[in-house]
Image (cartoon, rainbow, N blue to C red; front, side, top):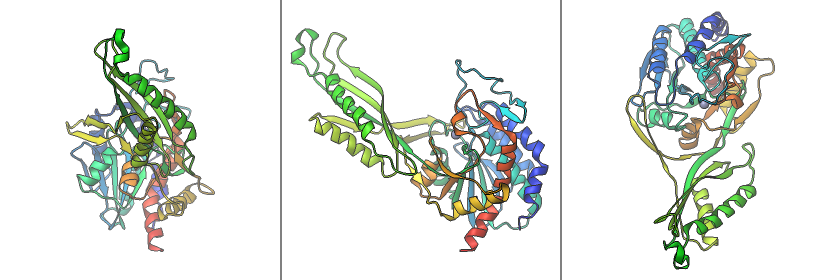
Amino acid sequence: MIDGLKEKVQTYREDLFQLIQKLIQIRSYSGEEREIVEFIQSKMRDYGFDEAFSDKLGNAVGRIGDGAIKILFDAHIDTVQVTEGENWTYPPFEGKIVDGKIYGRGAVDEKPAMAGYLIAGRAIKEIYGDRPLPFTLYVVGSVLEEDCDGYPLLHLIEKEGIRPDYVVLGEPTDLKIYRGQRGRMEAEIITRGKSAHGAHNRQGVNAIYKMAKIISEIEQLDERLEPAEPLGKGSVTVSDIVSKGPSLCSVPDFCRIHIDRRLTISEDRESVIRQLKEIASKLNINAEVEIPRYRGKSWKGTEFEQEAYFPTWVLEKNHPLIRAAQKTAERIFDGGTEIGVWSFSTNGVATAGRLNIPTIGFAPGKEELSHSDREELVLHDLLKATEFYALFPFELIEILNSK
Ligand SMILES: [Zn+2]
């Protein structure tokens, strides 16, 4: 059934490399993705996708086929910014190609996946034309991921009604199959005291002193957190502190800290809140624990808001999605590939973490180069990933049918 597909992808090699170059050249910081979304839609139309549009948030969405099984290929197309202190070998928006590698912002995180999806879709349409396909493939260029991971797909699924059965993420995996990530959340703790003149400080209650005890307990908590395979250990970091009082010569009556919490298996919103409240009650301190809300606006002007909680997720090792990915990898590399997990967070926090939709990741590029001035990609790896994207939907259907 999939004869000739891999070879078809290979004939588009030069187009693929030009495409990733063009995607890097279009600057697309979070919230400023209009130009790249329009470019992606035009490519989807050129390549014969059955549908190409942007949703109300501003995600670029393409569809191929209308079979019963719905597969979603996601690549976030926003990038983090280039800052003054960065020291690039080549200008970050040139997409310079040297010795088989391409350099620039987004060369790893994660424009290659979008280039690969577009060419894979083109190859599928070229071979199948308008004959029915056994799947519906959605190719999504999601926006705002760097600001609020998961939200763009949560919007697509819950507000636009495109609910996939399976999801593939294009975050860098260095051509391995990834099946999960640590979650993350933010929290705030507030202590309150009683203000008083600094000359009569005994009449007041110092909110900072109360918080200092809590901070010290949090530092110790970080060391006590237990690892859980395959994600390792969570972490807790006090990342900011603010206090208020009538003046700098008074006892402060308000103190707030901000916490970054990374979550491993079995740690979630409720367990973290409980843990923080326990610290305060053990110290006999009245403290408020809250989860802040994230607010933003897309390039289409759509405002959105979400609690700063991004749940952990892991897909079991022998899930059909992973077996299909491994079978696909075997068609491309001798001996298949390794299975792993990400250190950072992805849109999987929504699809797998919140909505329980089986999700994996597969893409070229090294995760540790993300967000750095060393983003570079081996172009041959992109070609291999593109072969994977073209073959994968067919392998998945075969595995599902063989059950
Ligand atoms: Zn990314």
